[in-house]
Length: 93
Image (tube, rainbow, N blue to C red):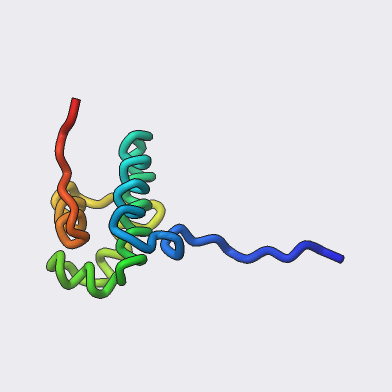
């Protein structure tokens, strides 16, 4: 009998704001801009991409594109999405 697999989607596991915060903290600690953009995309999909896009003042399709693999979101877009998710970007030492 062959093993059955199904696609794994991080957005399915980001149930609470705390889940999203911890997930994004790990992405920021890694420091890879593509990983950070992907993690923001996962968080936005977990909350509802249409809702996040509207709250960020962005088009749904443009947000999907910016946060997709190979996307390269502007810093302003990152900040808008963070704000729409109810999060702040702040430096720490």
